[in-house]
Length: 191
Length: 191
DNA sequence: CGACATATTGAGATCCATCAACCAATGTGG
DNA sequence: CCACATTGGTTGATGGATCTCAATATGTCG
Image (cartoon, rainbow over all chains, first blue to last red; front, side, top):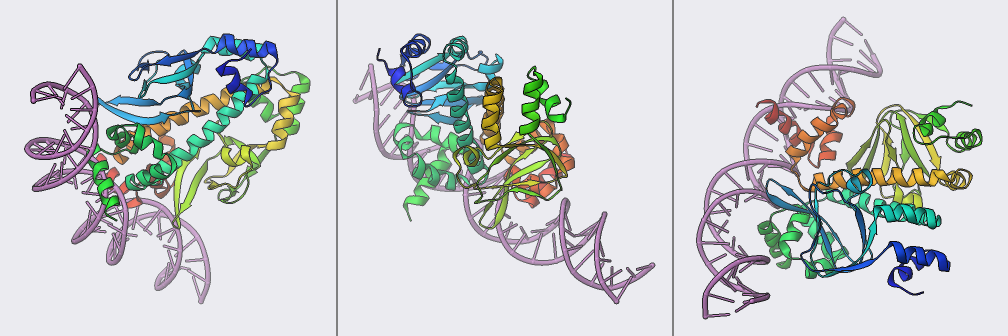
């Protein structure tokens, strides 16, 4: 029994035949076109995702303006946790900024998985710890640096994003206006 | 068998006598004086904490300056996840900004707990999901607002902090200099 | 080619950083 | 009890970075 999702999980867990089947039955892999909105403000999020291929953007609409707060690329998982775990309306959007291939994990299916594959609980906790740790660092980095420093940091740590994502989204992500990002780039190349 | 930690856990799980004993044996409650450094940059974090009483500050030292990125008060848990789970040196500090009573969870003891109380794994995952969700919101809020807005937001959501924490720490937490926070406050009261 | 989205540039206003002085509250030592 | 130092907070003047609004390139795609 071979399948993308089994390959993925097998990187972390050794699976029996039965367990593999559970994953195949519970976690479909679905393709989405660029521009697809995975989650809207006000909706209750019933799915979380793992990016096999592509790029997803998280953004808020504040005073009529889109404010991007995160990009998710290959091998990263995304969920609107507040909404997904508490069944409350989401306050943000998820959008595919490229054609995407995503592993889609439905909330109820996940509960089923916890029962059928008990060791998935530990994997899930550890993966969560890991993402949480990275997010802690991201917040800290953001608080402790200026827009220019954040841009330089982005250049070093995620240069791929500069190629994949339009600049006005990056600007929003860095907490500045597109005009300012343009000027920051100009300043930096002239040195 | 009664004890603070059992009372705490019982808010979320129904415990057998044996399980209660496991928690009592694995999670001591310890008092720390104001000013105590719980974790230093460069150290490997072997403990995570849950605040029973008091307030803990997380900060970095950047170019010789302290930059506060989080405050943890009653009923919140704190851990340097990167360091705690991966055994890597911490890049920040934890300091008690008040006298504190903390539940102290040692890494090895936690592994022991996962074995002795299997359902603790699920509690831990859900608690992590919850904290993670809140942190996602915190990051989003920070990216999408100005220092002044962040201060107003702090007034609404955590007014207690203004009483408990010196203003220059709050300034750092808001991403501005103490002088600027002073001016922001002045602007706001004059309206 | 045209239409629309994206990126750059310009000029002025606003906000924060910096550096320095000052003030109020508290604590210490003679 | 009174100088004096220390700490936390405020105020002032100046400069730098970003924002705003507007105009002008530069794509990109049908």
